[in-house]
Image (cartoon, rainbow, N blue to C red; front, side, top):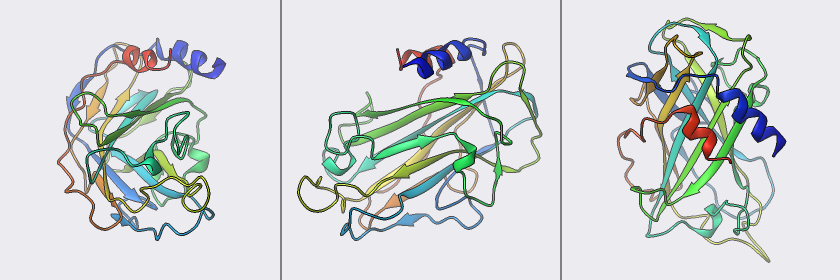
Length: 244
């Protein structure tokens, strides 16, 4: 709780709005557009082994001399009418904390550049089932991170693909006693939005369009992946309110 409150206070220094912009978004399993893959399959026959990982990355639409914060919204749509138990990751559910979103660049293992340039950030993350307007068979991964005021980073919009965060999906409770059904159910994961922000008055940007590909699939028989859709014009105030 202390970490979340500290981050909420830090986010208050950022601007209240962000202009819609070009640039682009990518989402790939195991890496960025250079070497990452678009589909992941799992036999769902073990509880052990490395977590499955996907990377959200962004091509900035403009130079940001004082880059200080970013966020990512990834929407997961499942085959069928509801969220399978294997993906029910909210605290108290069958697969609590199976899916996480990390902004810690020390955990990034890719060929792409790190948007944080190694700087330590404070982050928040929440898995949100059945977000209004997205259906009962959807799960939203909603997170963001910021660096302290005074340690802003100069970013040049030269077309470089920058890793924003990593999504990890664990294998626990897949088989055996207490297992969670639905691992084999197909899913489509779409990176719908990344927001890049600077201190108030400097200029913020919301990126929603794909660079190479902003979606990936899980298992065969995954639902048809939609085009990127704007989530909503959120402010950092709205982000921090999620965690109060």
